[in-house]
Image (cartoon, rainbow, N blue to C red; front, side, top):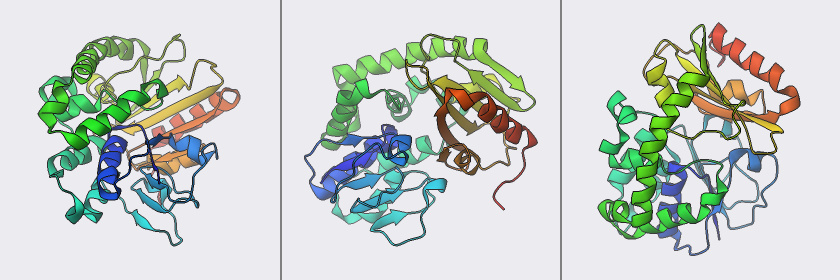
Length: 298
């Protein structure tokens, strides 16, 4: 039996909870949604998938992404919710030896982007927010760290987790990264009507940082489009789209929109990956749809 989940903070907490409920000792299988959708991941009978699209071979599935909903029977739970971890916690609440309510409540807020301006600008004042920023999707070189976090959070209280030397160092690095990320965002983001477009393709390395900072830097925009190369081969493009958490007004269901471009996600945030050869057309159509700002759920 394996836990198969996504390498973000919600996925980390999903793994913590599932390990305790099912007494799983096997290492977590960390997977990006697109890898699962493209059939690049072999799922085995007995696997528990969380925070990812469904696969027919799994034995249990827990998810909350709008575009991952299925209409056939399965074991597990799907519902639109702030986090997948919250769904798991609700399902097995009586089977935990430790109190994870505070951790799950924080995960709900972080994964649903229910954050204040101060939390975005000064995450160092908010322990859960800061720790969540040490986990980056897509960087599989960090698998040892993700597994370490799962182990630490499952064994110790949160102050002890933060006191771990590696965790402390990564938190310090995040604070410095965010300062530099602001510089990159200002240099590589343009406004197209009420859409902010951050394009990192001209850089040799894609900068990492607080994904919510762009909303504070470009308050006129109700949605952001972030464009980057998937890896160093520069053959595939990744586009992330997110409703501003500080300015309402985006009527587009992002997950539904990006489903037309080999992606998906939530109503307010999602991503798509596609070959460089079709990027110009796809990016133009995505931005155009966001500028029209029409409800696409009907």
